[in-house]
Length: 94
Image 1 (cartoon, rainbow, N blue to C red):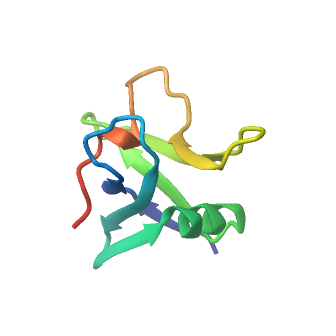
Image 2 (tube, rainbow, N blue to C red):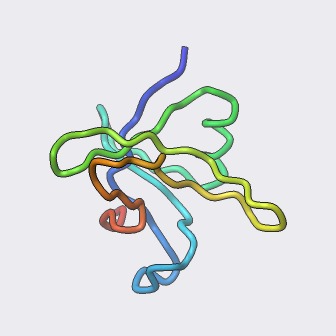
């Protein structure tokens, strides 16, 4: 059965660059957790975990893997017409 987890924070290098790649994602369901980007991508693709973010209105946005030709895969939220959402705007993980 696929686990569901809300991504509440990210780590990037360097944190002040809004276009730099996410290195880790994290959250706190029953306890604090943090995964590397590669681990999170693998868990999504193996259908082990489903990740989402929540907007200020509580609306969930599913996190998906994007595999552009000639570039490394990355995570982003599915297109949502109601609210803008961006993993890069989440706070830094501890």
